[in-house]
Image (cartoon, rainbow over all chains, first blue to last red; front, side):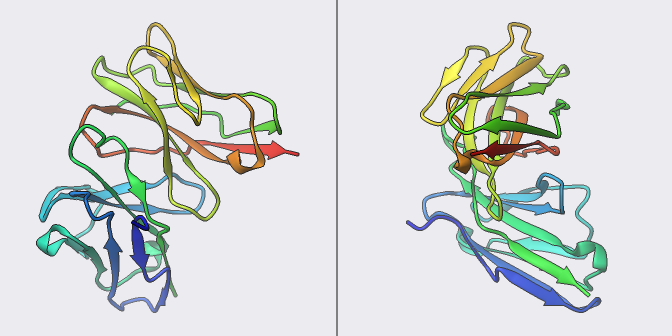
Length: 115
Length: 110
């Protein structure tokens, strides 16, 4: 297993465009998380899934953001009508739901730049 | 969720021990104390966690104050590879919505 992967690693887009990011978790992990990280700050929780069910969304997540995890495997995060304030690193993590659920494994992130 | 206070930055010499403090005075009795670290240009990685007793693993030790309002992550012999931002995260068991805060940036000098 190669760990959590994210695609693309970098994305530059113009304000107003839609973007979609993909996350492939570790195969036996049924929990998947999305975070956003801006420069000099720690990661900020956005949402998480257990299998295909989206169990929680941050109040900071505007309605321009949507995440899916069809079939409980990979996940996508879409940002519609991007704004310059959306520029950040988007991190995905996965974990089991059992005894070691406290250990989240993070991917390398997708860096989004909105011009 | 409990709020945490960590120094913005610390510096250590290679091969020396490092003690990274964290104050979490509003921690509840059911909150575990997790530590994660983030190496440059990487996602965070799990370091250690504990509830009340001190904990050791191959990466570090975690010393938890008796009143649980503070904890200290101990790296016994810092290496250059330990240069990272270290986050202290109190969280309830099986409640996995982590709030990272700003963490402590550790610089290790050769």
